[in-house]
Image (cartoon, rainbow, N blue to C red; front, side):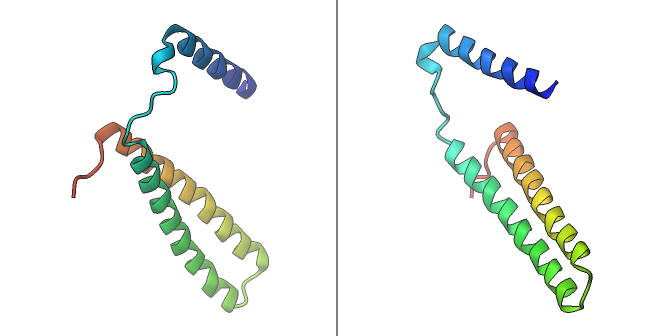
Length: 96
């Protein structure tokens, strides 16, 4: 099922690129800012979760639980970064 989705996505991208070659590689100028915002947000969350794992280690918790906290931090930071990027694409960037 997953491989079929990947093949379908590649096929549709090729078909769209053939149909409109002028817009095939076009990028929105805000793409770089949106990616940067999402990555910075995800990395900030990762740092906060790493600070959570540090007291577990200092308290002598089992390595299993420390590794689970760190793994959860990586997963949640990636999810948060993706959500921020999607929200920025959907509703635009904040103008400061």
